[in-house]
Image (tube, rainbow, N blue to C red; front, side, top):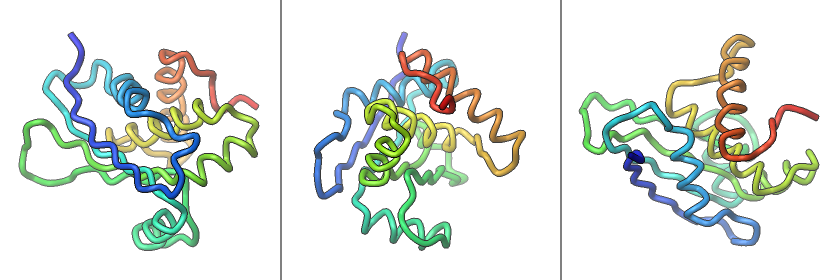
Length: 154
């Protein structure tokens, strides 16, 4: 039985060219959550332009310029149904530029960013080498299940 996932996909980017469709994003979210929950979950993914991506990165991470993905886990003390995982913000122009610069298919890089963001919502991080290795290993497994190559192989 498939996990019930309530996905709120918000498209706030200037240009929709190259963006994944909702069914793809839903499949990537579902794969990221496989075997982790029995109850319904909810997540918001907002795809933004460079202006919003920059503002959010500077406001929340205090770093200049936009970044590829930001995750905001729900840390409320109230148990909600469905289980609210949090919000992910993905900056479309950054993803497109990274895919081009890294010679990756844009769709596979989009999938990686969604999986990466989802793992952050689940508590994974890459602040130190041990945590980064654990998170990257999990990303590789999920991406493989979806038919995508290891994003860390050059």
